[in-house]
Structure formats: structure tokens, C-alpha cells
Length: 131
Picture 1 (tube, rainbow, N blue to C red):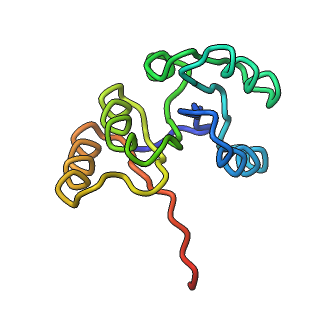
Picture 2 (picture 1 turned 60 degrees about the horizontal axis):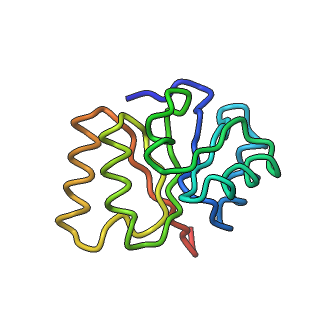
Picture 3 (picture 1 turned 90 degrees about the horizontal axis):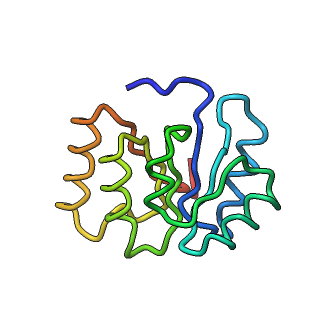
């Protein structure tokens, strides 16, 4: 289940929150953000150019098919997290997803089981207020 360094991360949206991932990735040698996807190809292309990303895709499916990406960051609207996490795991990608992963415990359990069966990492962005 190991992630070979550097992780080649694709952004599954052009959401504003992606800036936090981009900033952190620039500070470490273990993550390279290499691609972005949007339903609007021109928007993805502009986003990639502004942020120095290698590739852009005009669909989320195209990013999941990109062999140069081994992990995805899902920052889509909450209602789409479960669907695109399923698709990403099915495409053999490791997943970092904003909360919530799903809208039920049963759906979340299915994602965890799928990740384990596929030998993929499934991670959730969650901030703890107190440590």
C-alpha cells in the first residue's frame, strides 16, 4: 500500500481550497501536484497555467485515466465526494478527499473496504481544533 515518493497528485476540481494543497506540496519533496481537472477544459487549462501545473483535463474522467497521476485530491461539492472517491479508487488512484467522504456510515464503510481491497490509501481532510 506504499506510496512511492514523490506522490503525483491530480486535483479533481479547480476549487479555491486547492490552494492549501498547492502551498503545502510546494514545501515538500514528497508530493508533486501535476494535473488539474474541470468540467470546463478552458478553465482547467487556465488554472494549470496560472499555477504551473504540467497538465489539465477537461473532464474528471480524463484525470482518472492519466497514468502520470497516482493520487487525487477531491475538493468537489460534498454531494459528489462519494461518487468520485469510488471512481478514483476504481481507477487505481490513492485518494485524499475533503469531508465528508459520504453521507452515511454504510457508504463510508464501503469506501474503506474498496480502498483496502484495491491496496490504495484513502485519506480524509479533517482539522482537529484541539490536539
